[in-house]
Image (cartoon, rainbow, N blue to C red; front, top):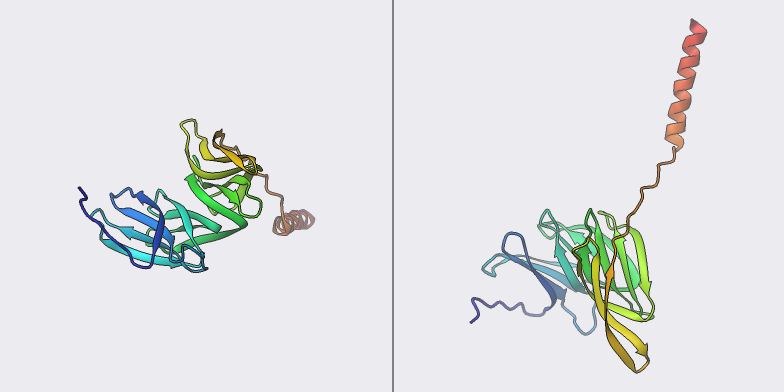
Length: 211
């Protein structure tokens, strides 16, 4: 027996989650057949299904979403993935031209793993980002479209989708993907550092000359 039921006219939801405070967030698009730019939305509800906020974003559709530790929401969709804060305001938005992100999963340390398919070729992909959405690693699956992903117990990810055996046959597909360790690149001293070093050298030489 339903406890409560809510409808939201002129919207189509593709994803929904239960939030840490017992509420809900749903996401999708206002144009499910055409995916028009600007029609993606997120709606946040309290535990009783009452709307807290409803925001639209300058992207066509949201396919998946995850709550962040601070109550924000990371999402993925057609050509775009992004992050909003707990009030639904945009933190950052990143383009992935030609890709449809069907799954977003928090990485063990920071950032997100986005997975889906290349709309142009039909092949799949997965990539990891940092906390600001910059891509740090990427892998592709030429004959497989990825439609779902979750965190795996070993700190990696379990991906699920369709493996295309031929133009007329396919098979269900599942893969356990390891998390990729990213080694920070040592910073190279820039002009500012060089200039500061030269200034220090001149100061030392000047003092010795005065002595």
